[in-house]
Image (cartoon, rainbow, N blue to C red; front, side, top):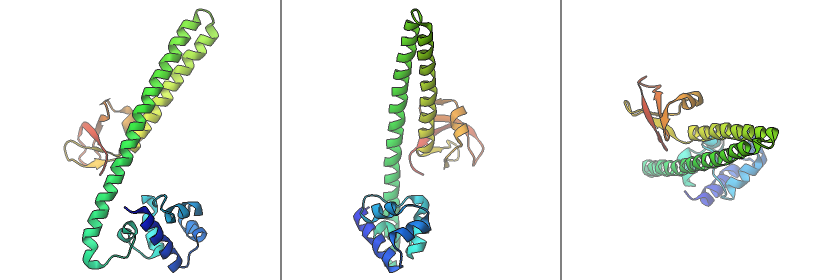
Amino acid sequence: MNQEKIGKFIATCRKENGYTQASLAEQLGITDRAISKWENGKSLPDASIMLELCELLKINVNELLTGERIIMDNYKDIAEKNLIEMRKQEEKANKKLLAAETFLVTLTVVASLSMIMSGCIIAGQNTTMGFILCTLGSVITTLGIFYGLKIEHDAGYYECPECKERYVPTMKAVVMAPHYGTTRKMKCPYCQSKGYHKKVLTK
């Protein structure tokens, strides 16, 4: 997707519909700085507000993602291209999230183990300091694992091995599920079967 082209198209449509950046931002419940970033090609509108934005600008989502008005003869082809591009972007973003999870968990484990080991060594000479280091190491481990799980939960979907449906489970289901890597044993919300559901990056 050409972000600069999309940005210019948003700016043109905004002006055609009589909105300033501030008034459009107010309608969408965001800042005018976000509108400015779109129009300067620095970012794209979030998927959660695309439909509302398109309604205000009197365009459809495919025209927004293409950055121009679409002739109906070409509509299907362009829609398919936009869908493929959005999936690629979603997959790329989710890969980054999972890489961040791996880094965070690794860093947390190394840091917390270092603290706990240091605490155990120091405890012989200074019990209070040893206790503080061991406690701090345990807290860091807990927080690191929690945020790692939160990142894994938010990145992509899980696929049921039975019905092949892809879904986002509850955070509780992810935390409580037995697992190996990012594959977790859960109950499918569609077919209700239990099994090891693998992490996938797009729907």
